[in-house]
Image 1: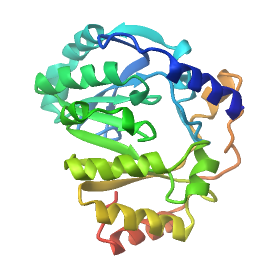
Image 2 (image 1 turned 90 degrees about the vertical axis):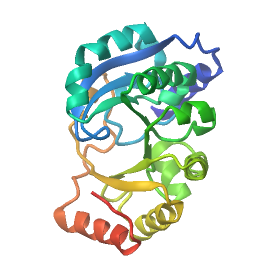
Image 3 (image 1 turned 90 degrees about the horizontal axis):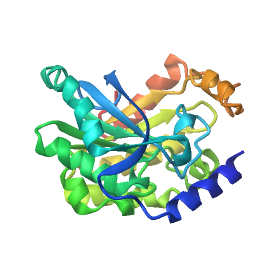
Image 4 (image 1 turned 120 degrees about the vertical axis):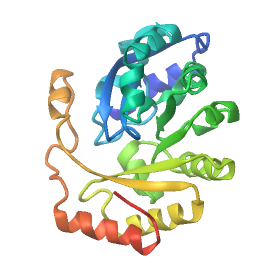
Length: 261
């Protein structure tokens, strides 16, 4: 399943991106507590170069499955909720898919939010971090950076891609002093190895700009989506982590002075 879809994304990467004022999205929604501080208006862009085994948004993998919208369209919808999300200490998060597959659209959307006083967050794997300009990052109040594994081979088995671009992007964000929340999905048998967690904790501790690590327990709630799309959920037989494993991982981050939640 993964290789043909990766070829599709490679073709999308070669396409000339449309003008900054338009992009391809799957949907938008409101969320609380998982996509940045406060209540968030979350825009799910389409297209992603990775195929994570635990991905819970398979409907966003391909750009051709999305719908084209303008930044004005999105901002009109944001304005419907502006007062609500502002009072709730929230903002707008551009997620996906991978938002940096469409850097001009994503950058313009973040700029419009930032300039209008809304907290602007970017949710990314960092795999395409080289596509983010310094100007785009200056308009980003918070980066939610998914570091899926600290082990290069484990990362490739889990995502189909290379770890180094994400680490390079993380170091660049540190050099720029941009606030970051690292997101780490804890998957028994895939990301829970002690040395893997130690490697991630050591890396995060040396950056200096990471405010917290979100340890996200793996779940199988996306299984229904996979079934509706005619896809096989690769981790259907993997159970969520138990309390003891979660406590061990949090303790490992704490031992390196890293705040995890």
